[in-house]
Figure (spheres, rainbow, N blue to C red):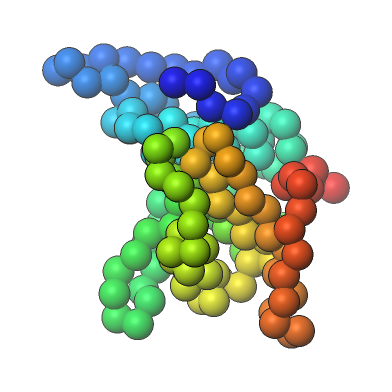
Length: 146
């Protein structure tokens, strides 16, 4: 499937007629679904293009939101282990709409990451969030690690 990312080298394996992709953060093979393909491309993008160290990245960790268990896709932390970027991934055929933003915002009110990214692999939305003034602005790209 064509996604709007640079070309990265992925490791794949097949098992019982299913394809798996190696996740370099979780250090294991995971079932290759359309959403997982987007997630893996974004992981590689933030590591190899934007230069964030893998040790500051968490993938698919559980959150408790109002007593309900949820999982975020990707969080990038700063060196003090405070969330800096929350990334929500969708399959390429999923349109990113208000419902998608609302879901990501629900996660982010708990995490308080100043950067919110939503992507279906073809469209990417990057929002810089100012929690104190309760406003946001769209950016063209994820900032490179300083």
